Image (tube, rainbow, N blue to C red):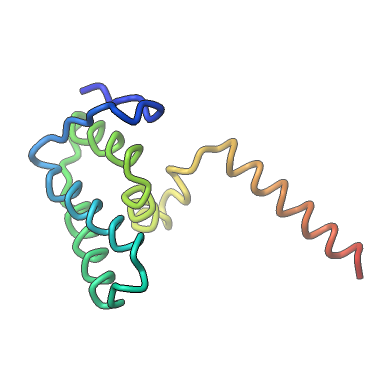
Length: 118
């Protein structure tokens, strides 16, 4: 399965049946994040916890993992949950290295400016 280009908003992502629950829960969580004032914290937490459970059950074969990566590329909320689940072992494993390095440089510069302003 070739994931669609993330630059093409009209590209279709083919979701294998075994990842249907992952995609459905990620989409639901994404919708809840877009309407935070209308969502009870318990509801959000329940969906996030269920998504974490189904992520833990994703098969480890290459095809499933490729499909999962394509889903994470298309659904940032899914990538965030995945990173949170694997942070101890892998850190921010889905964050692009260049963006992470730029963020670190910007943080160091801000700290230096704050220290110099004292």
